[in-house]
Amino acid sequence: MASRHKRSLTPVLLLTIGLLIVVYGWEYYQELRTGQRPLALPVRIPTQEAPMLAAQTIGVLVGHENSDTGAICEDGLTEVDVTRLIGKALVLLLRDAGANVVLLTEYDPQLEGFQGDAMVAVHVDSCIDRTGFKVARWTDSPDPARDDLLVACLVQAYLARTGLPLDVTTVTANMTEYYAFRRIAPSTAAAIVETGYLGGDRTFLTEQPHISALGIAEGLICFFRMSVPATPAP
Ligand SMILES: [Zn+2]
Image (cartoon, rainbow, N blue to C red; front, side):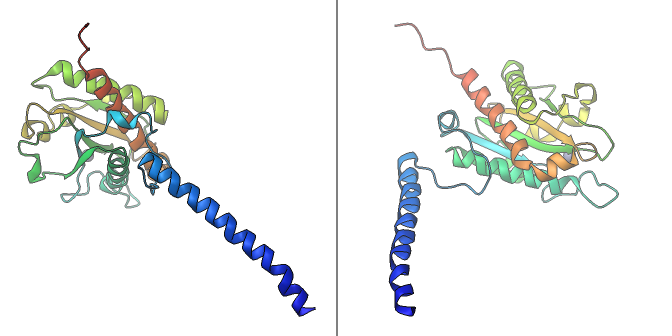
């Protein structure tokens, strides 16, 4: 009996090994073909969109990181806990698509004269029972048309991706006078995103930070696409 079992196990074992070779071989082939390694996130920038981000220099400012907590909820959840989740996911997504990403912390010395194609600051709103996101540029932007385009793209993409309502009525001077706007180079397009409320949007923000990040990344793709100068007629 024992020897018959052994004999019947051999084809099963060979078949299993064969299947593993096929599965891993296919993944390896895809990796070689697309030049992309598997990403430790449940989402990624679609391959056809990635060229819009490739070689772009993008500053991702993780709000309150290395500085303070930001807003604090009664149960101890802090704003920086959430900006870190979203910021890290955003950095991974953009780098995966080939962007040159500079991770910036709050009051980062690298902000001084930062030269990039865009800079986005990621923040989260207070712990009140309210829902929604908003995006703003510097009141004294050196290039209002450029930064308005960035804001419009971020609003449209974030709205479409997250389904959160746009909460324009609560844009504050904290956003439009954000200190970082003054520090970066005038040639860098910049915006600040309040990605949702720690109160009403906490489940979404803490459980799906990658979706929030994807919304911001898609806003950047929109901005770079719309910023491309029209090709002159031959
Ligand atoms: Zn903040």
